[in-house]
Length: 200
Image 1 (cartoon, rainbow, N blue to C red):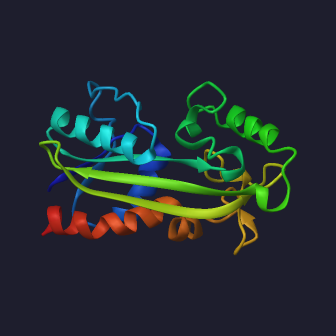
Image 2: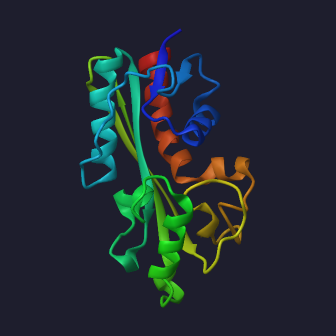
């Protein structure tokens, strides 16, 4: 069975990938089985740039098919911030609480349409030689609420309200989020390529 590696150690991202691709006859894993995998510096100024760096550097190092993924939250009224700095917006990588607190502070004076935001997920598939086979992007539009709502999800999910549902990603059931999230929309585009290239 062909192995497909998600170029991340983020268990929550892996869980979402397994939900989106887990029915395919592939050995899906994250970087956990590869303690010596290189740490890829996210030096690009775009999501797709960072996802490409991960895929192109990790695939030959692991001699495996790799999905490089980069995602984050963009608030147009803040000039697109947090953007590619979403995971380290408040300074420490992956400190969801501090990142959410900073976003609430930055948006405290904003009202109405100025609270619009969208999540972006980019995914890049590279073959074991490091050649990029596919690059995709998915977006999900919403609004930033004034206080956390719900305990589900991760990142900025408790602040990201999806207007069609009247709930935040922190409140929505995981199976609903999986159907319409930015990551679901990106992987929906990636899936046919994975099937064609790896499943045959």
